[in-house]
Amino acid sequence: MSTSFLWITSKIKKLIEKVKTKLIKVKSKSIFTKSGLGVKWSINQYVGCDHTCLYCYAKFIKKWRPANYGKWGTWVEAKINAPELVKDKYVNGWVYMSSISDPYQAIEKRLKLTRKVLESMDKRIKLIVQTKSDLVLRDIDLFKEFKNIEIGLTVNSFSGKAKKLFEPFVSTSRQRIKALQILKKNKFKTYVFVSPIIPELIDLKDIIKRTKKFVDYYWFEFINLRGAGKKFAETLKKEFPASYKMVIDKNEFKEFVKECKQIINSQNIKVRGIEIH
Picture 1 (cartoon, rainbow, N blue to C red):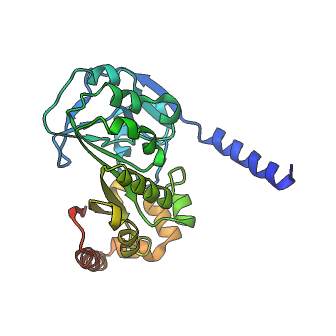
Picture 2 (cartoon, rainbow, N blue to C red; picture 1 turned 90 degrees about the horizontal axis):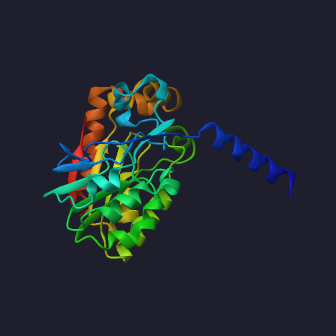
Picture 3 (spheres, rainbow, N blue to C red; picture 1 turned 30 degrees about the vertical axis):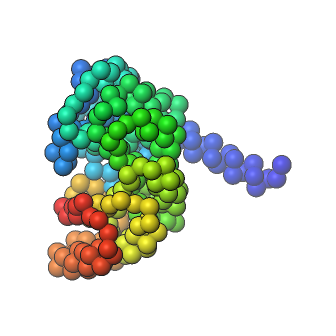
């Protein structure tokens, strides 16, 4: 066994120990929540996420959690009774999974809470699943039991330094695009959520070109600098100053949005929404 292999293995082990997620098991009184995200309901069997994306907008949730939980991204709340809460419970209208977490974050591999929820859920429910992980492919067998289901993956152009800084523990865009291909081959309705759109770091034409053959529709979301938080803003300013300048300059950002819309409108794709914060 080579010295370099041992060194890499040691580094990986240390990284795993460093980012080990604190699992907090809780019980909830209900699981379906009225939503303001363009659908009637949302469901979050998890609160918190071990993807630790630096730009995560859901981090505001931590102000309603005990201080001893620790920093956002280091803990995950799992509603362990979620499978019982959805059992024999039908709700009318589309249900979005998940709005303040990711149903296929790393901890799901061993906990299988999302899978248990899907197993117990009334298959007549109209379900929208969104994730950043190709782990979603594990549950294709259960997805096929639903009468109405749409499955989407967040896709962006982050690679290299940007990927390492902004979403280090998430499947690569290539893996996510491959997952979309497989989902379409299994005859599911699929969509791409292009987010966060940041000047100089996102190539809209490339994302659309690589996905339009097996995607039914798109959502687009521009970066919400305020929602992303101070640490993200500081990192963007330090590591990608040109991008930061365009985001904070109202006129430059307005022009950037205009150019992006022109690209989107020229691509002959179905667009469900364009979110500008």
